[in-house]
Amino acid sequence: MVSTPSRVYAARLVGLPIFDPQGDQVGKVRDLVVTMRLEGAQPRVLGMVAEVFGRRSVFLPMTRVTTIDSGQVYTTGLLNMRRFEQRSTETLVMGEMLDRTVTVKSTGVTGSVYDVAMERSRTRDWVLSRVAIQEPSKGLRRRGQTHVVEWNDVVGLSRTDDRQGATHLVAAINEMHAADAAQMLHDLPTERRTAVAMALDDERLADVLEELPEEDQVGILEQLDSERAADVLEEMSADDAADLIADLPPETQEILLQLMEPDEAEDVRRLMKYVENTAGAMMTPEPVILGPDATIADALAHVRNPELTPALAALVYVCRQPLECPTGKLIGIAHIQRLLREPPSTLVAGALDDELEVLRPEATIDEVAAHLATYNLVAAPVVDENRRLLGAVTVDDLLDHMLPDNWRERAASSRDSDG
Image (cartoon, rainbow, N blue to C red):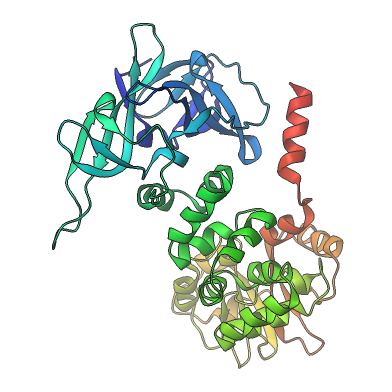
C-alpha cells in the first residue's frame, strides 16, 4: 500500500474511489468537510463526503481514512450509512469554498480560490494548509496569474462572500459524468446550487437537470429567465423536457413552449398529450431512423453518435418516408449485433427483424416492462394504428418511471436498517 503524501489537494481527491481493507470499492469522494476557525487559523478537516450505493452521500471521518494516494482512498472499512447532513458549523470545500474572493496579506494580490491543500498537523489532525488562487485575467490574457500561498496569509475565507462566483466549481462539474455532477449540485446549499446552475452552459445544465430529482429541476428552472429556460429545455431529451414542463403551472408551460423552437416544442407537446406512465408518455421521439435504401455502413455510422444512450444505439428503425416521428410505415428493426455481422455495403433492409411485436402508445408501464422482458430488448418501437413509428421506449426510460419518486431515500432507509 502506498503511503499517504504529506500534502493533498482537494480538487484531485474528488471522484477518487474509496476502498475497504479487503480491496472492495465502497464509494467515491465527493467533497471535504471542514470546520472553520478564527481568520488565519488553519481549518480542521473533519472528513469526506462519500457517495455510496444509490448516489447517496454519507460522512467518512478522517479518523477512518488510512491511506490516500494518487488513485484511491483506503478506509478502515467501517462506514456509517446514515445520510450526510451538513451542520451549521461545517463548510464544504468544493461546494462552498471554491471561487471565494480572497486577498493575500503579504502581497495585496486579490483572486478567487480554485483549490486548497490539506496536510497532517503535529497532532495528527488533517488541516487546510495552502490556498491556490487565480488573479482576474488582464488585458489579452486568457487566464490570470496563479499563486499557492499559506493559509494564514489569506484573508476572506472565514466569512460569507457575497461576491463568490462559480467559475472553478463549474470547471470541476464539467469534468464529471452528468449523474455525478447532479449529485454534487443536489448536495449544495440552495443559494450556491442556484449560482452554479446559472453558470453552467445550456447543454451541460440540460444534461445535469435530467439526472436531478423533480424538486431540484423545478427549483432551478424557476430561477432562470424564460428565454434561457426554453433554451435549456431544447437541449434536454424531449421526454425529459415533457416531464419537467408538466410539473410547472399551465401558464408557465405555455410561455416556455412558445419560446422553444417550433420543432422541439412540437415533440414535447405531442408527448404531453399521452397519459402518464404509458408507452407514449415515456418514449423518446428521436430514435435512429433510416430508410430502406440505407446500407449497413450508414446504420453503423448513425449508432456511433456519442450522444446516443446505449439503449437507443442498440436498435435501428427502418421506415418509409418521412423519416421523422411520426414516420411512414415501420418496416422493421435491425439489432446492432446483427449489423456488426453483415457486410457494410449491403442494405440494412436485408438485416431486419420484421416479426417483432410492437407497442401501442396507450400500453401501460407493466405492459411495456413485460414486452421488453419477453423479447429480451433494451428498447422497443411505439407505433400508431397505421404502424407509423411514434418513438421508442428504452429500458432506462422504463426504470425512471417504475422506480418511486423517492427511491434514493428509500434505498438509504433500507441500508440504515440493515446497518
